[in-house]
Image (cartoon, rainbow over all chains, first blue to last red; front, side, top):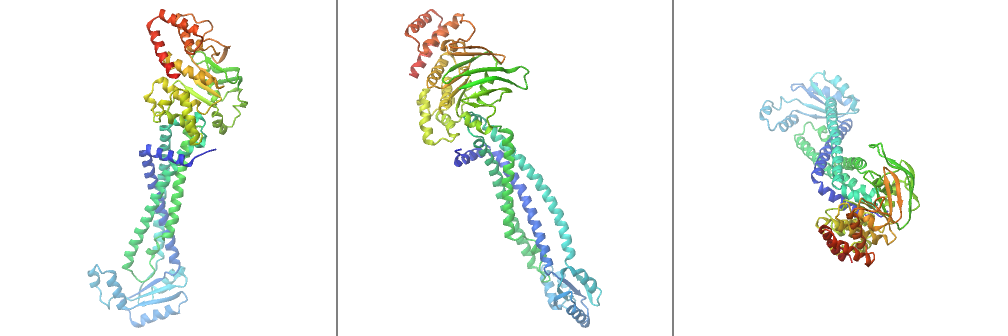
Length: 302
Length: 282
């Protein structure tokens, strides 16, 4: 079979141009649906990263009472040093934690003025030998004399996982609806393209053009619509990632306890974003291909 | 070349059979008129030959190939051996005459070089070499039909199917079309033409296959349109006038002119128009 690729491509773009409004609608829906899919994947990846990060050594913080005596502090310190649950600890004395407080609330002088160096609680930041022991540490130390409270990020992460999983479900559900919408729109677009070229198609059949020769330009058209939408969607996903990255960086400047930030882990790496982009582009081509294939099968009986 | 063996075909929407156990044979190079009232099965006959439809029963052979057992992927290649002309021309309005004819070769993947030479040859045959760059809507009906014939013939098909090619044209213009079909027939191309045009059938005196309600009722070499000789004066006249146009003997030509002089003006004007047309063609 002699088949010219350049001819097929030329036909495809002529079709796209003639059908511009429909093609635009189809491309826009593809963009919206695939952006949603991409964002959902990005969040999912972020939470997965955060969970991994946490299980690699995020620890617990022991907040002492501001008026805890030296012996109380030393007692806790010794216990922490001897405990097999704890890997290492970093002690922030009154002035360290006051500085941290000043840094954290630099834009709220009222809060800062409520404290002096002496009334700021001191803090032990500890790395756990086994991250799953956080609850045990909490139970063991929260009632020690001089200990105000024990903070560990387990609950935070669990809550975050819950919220994000609901968020992901909603996003994926909406994305699925939009993917169906884009399938239907591509189908309609190709149907219109076939209709507007019905005379040419009739002549082609009559003079013996092969089925694939007639079909391929229409299928390419659908795939190109899907591809254009997907490329734009993945660009949007990259943009979303860098916006998230910047937001987290700004928050980190106000950095809290010196512990590895949970937030910073929730941003997917650019490597991961590229993988998501590839997934989107492939699925865009597939959505376009399926939509146009069904249209071609239904309206181009050769 | 073509053989129908007890071919029957009916459509879902109609209880009557479109074709009823039709058997016939057409040899290479024949010129066959397919006549009969509307709904007699002429168009179905052509559709079966094109393999747009499959018979319910019976078999059709074309050039040694059996059509209903032919795989659907082979149908396009089979159709490259056929040319088709219709009453409504079916030209592409946004393409020039040249592009319309070239399109038929482009879509079966012929090289540019081949297309160029074949298209201009084909346009010369139908006498439109000088109008290659016109658009269809700038042409008269007769010229448009000639473009359609050029397109059908450009790939040198073995068989040319024509479904009422003169149905939309006035008698004089129809003459021009018939001359071209006759010219094509002389290149050993089998021509099957479905028509209601009494004058043309009577003038050409070729094989006539008459269908009625899907059955063969007459198969006559050098036949005429009706069962009997044409009897109205108009029918005789048009028959005679058309005989002249195809260029029979000079004697008959003179007779025709005499008859013409004796008769009414409208027909004279037809002849006048026709004369111009033939000049154009030669």
